[in-house]
Image 1 (tube, helix red, strand yellow):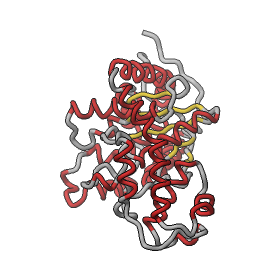
Image 2 (cartoon, rainbow, N blue to C red):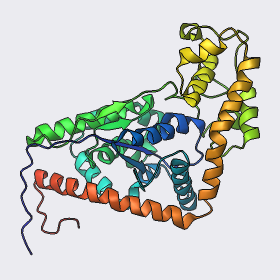
Image 3 (cartoon, rainbow, N blue to C red):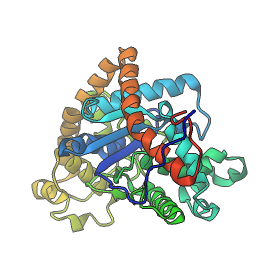
Image 4 (cartoon, rainbow, N blue to C red):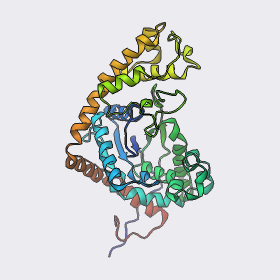
Length: 351
């Protein structure tokens, strides 16, 4: 039995690396596509290392039917690939296959403070009035999210506004760890919040986020919807009686109109101003059919490709396994260095 090698770790050089993850909770929507998947595909074209994770450990912070969880994990993998994420250029895997996530999360459980977690608004929202019966995992969820990011020394994380608080906690954890141990080891990650439709709203209520948990299927566009369903949902989307304005400022106080214009802009890769320059002064009788045609053209190829991919579950599992091996090769040395900094005796690194 040999002694673990002690490596100088006071300084670390952090290369630009993008990490992000999505829970396999089933039912991908237009919001997932515009807010995450489409952006993920674009990021891999910028010559930056990109790591994308299906965060199945996060999913079990609330009870999951095992068969449903497995199906949702594979469906999400198909959604990543169908949306343009190339497993050869990006690393794509599911979280539970790389144990470094859970191991580093425990270290961060011991770095993060209870007061920090008590301020997390998402826990309050999800736990509701039944807070005492919520799982410990749901409470400590942000520490695992920090581990997801920092076990790869990721420097940038594409997130929606609703995850910004969790990312700020990851920054606090990195700073406290570095200060506690006198190192510059973990990067202080930067959130990437960009695009006109990073937060897609319900088609039935412009004040609510588009969600797969909404009881009304008419409130959302699912990535598995066919052309007829997409078109019908957009044509029936809630709007107001006024024509579209000529400038973005004219959308103030018009949540439903703003949402539909944002969706058009994101799908067409245009600015809101460009969309209004084309459709300003026109009513929704003209705009909705144009949006429906655009959405059908952009989304039905994704739906078809997801269907094709899900016919070969073994291939999806192979892709996730290969991605996990590549992720492990990055994560394991960082975790071992973390243990070294903390003072753990590691005569069997990687075990």
